[in-house]
Image (cartoon, one colour):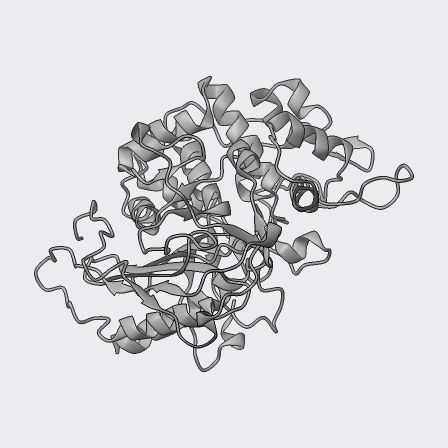
Length: 461
């Protein structure tokens, strides 16, 4: 799903052993009574749910890995209390019912994770190792799967969409001003959000058309009418019959490439993976990413790894209303994962353990195109300026003009519409992951992550 982001200059922000896990120590996962207003129950979601009186899972400085000689183990000394405070500030927001955050250094000398709130109304406490709904962080996994197939010769970035999916899916999918441009769309267009295709989840049908036409976005329909299965055929039908392209497929080697975030691009990519491999996307992801990297706590809903029971994830909210879309989320392959697994995944990508050749990851970052300022309702909930995009990966760096006295380094990774994030700050070699499980909080990562980085920079000095 798309993610709300800072929308303009006034926006407030926007090697060690590789197989280590965030294994909570005995100090992790304890409950403590909340203080202040958190001691009182408050209204929860639909159906009269109420929030139980406060149990907050405290954060913890996790055991460090065995370090190579010469690594400064005090590099981020004193950072933990600041991370606890930042997590408390996020959780204090009235619409946030649960929150999870993890910070780890690439060298393995600093690892911290914390959690707040309950997994469900009156349910058990959220813990640092509780898995959560990743939302569009999944796109980084989809891109990783596609690029592994490119390495294996199963796909090429230049492959045409119409040559990889049945005509029933691709027929007149991109018709702009009466001209069918579908045949111009390539795998690379989809990865880069440069296809011009509308977002089947967030976009609204254009004005005009038949009288009485339903102009709600799909997310509005789901919130009002409830959960449903959503196969790729439904995405194709909605894009073709109800929505309109935003611009032509772009010339990817031109001086300026126009992009717009669209969940449609990545649903088509999962369809391409399935068609090429003649298997489910879950199976392809397992074979190419999850199994090689031993990501045992990452899975598509309904497809837990190793036959083990599917773990409960924190309840999603839209404001105060509970969001329950298990069928829809399973249909679009959005992942559940722990913070530990997500950090391990991004570390593996950065350290060259996912792809066979370093050139693959370099290709995904060879060109950064910037999202524009929002101009319509849907784009207000999608990534916008100053966020940039490569092939399945975001880069977020606030311009120096907006932070002249407190600059922060760039981060790369991805975010999601429910307030989820997974980033690597290369300048500090810090990995950051977290979630607030709130549909209206997509901009939270772009405000919180810079504060975490500023705290880390101060602790490092």
